[in-house]
Length: 266
Length: 228
Image (cartoon, rainbow over all chains, first blue to last red; front, side, top):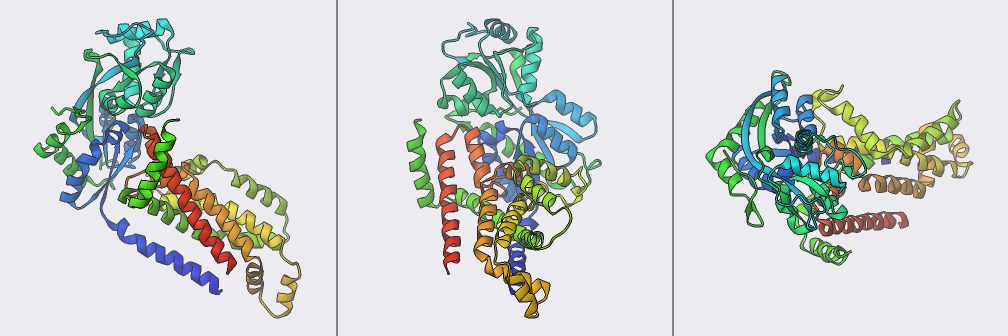
């Protein structure tokens, strides 16, 4: 029985060692890979954590999954970019209120050789039509993320139902999809932030930008405590207030990668 | 591949400079997997002992089941426990999803079949005279089983090493149940997945080398234990 007692003691000891770390107040934020992978959150969170003496746990997933995490009550705050689904989330009572946080835009990326001849298109729907007609590979996120949502909306505007060997549904994050598009010498839709962070890592280029339909707004929603009573409302609201404050807005607009501003505040 | 050379250099720098974030990740990996393997041992070693020593109906079926569970994909284990721990699941009120405790739970489920399987093999291979001898010498059934465990301790260490190898190297459970939260549930494997998704291949591979180094140290340590 001696050995058993040692094992039990060890288990108890490890529990005690970790208990203090678990006691700290933690705010759970579900957000998109674009805000986490770009490094924005690493610049935004520490000042808030210091002021509130808390920890913000970032779960970085696609917008679709982030919203699902909010619906299930597994997170306190959702920071995503899919306005239509965000408004649905609030309308169905899962979120308290959607706040405009920041924005940037989407860009169409493609190989320098531009086999579909879309370079410089001002009309994104026309550009997509040409890509579909040329049969050049197009890599889709295919993961119900905000970017995927936007892409489907744009295909609809182009009047094309994308399918076939040229249309690759990756089911991966933005960065992985850019890498894949580079390897396959195909086109893809990306948010500008992730593109700037990845531009140096492959030989794609922006082939179309500036269409009004490429606007990419990010929203911030506190999960509804009426639905999920365990949500840390006070801390969550303090977080929202911090991000929308003068200080938060300065941190967002002051954040740069390779000398370029990634996100813009209202 | 241009990044192979880079990553070797990066790995060395990370190891030598004891980079804070990397250390934290290594610590999370080790801590979670050690706690999980300890708990798995407490369950699996007696379980394996009983299965090996007792004759009961359905013994073969139990063994087959155990072997099948060893092949269970980590993401399936992750998914099942996710369903249990999510706020909408039966144990949702404890808020365990995306914590180290959730990762431990998943890793325990992964490790128990392996440790139990190897324990069964070790105990079945022990000298068959130990049990009757111990019993005639007046030991209770518990004491007798403990005596067998002492005899086959090398086999048991091998069982634990195999289980530990599986859980420290897995990514499915750690990612789904831990959520890859920086400084909290980010393990070496989820960090590698993240860095790969960010296109930081050299850094990801460097972390892989760090993981291998840590695994080597753990195994050297266990080897030392065995020799004593």
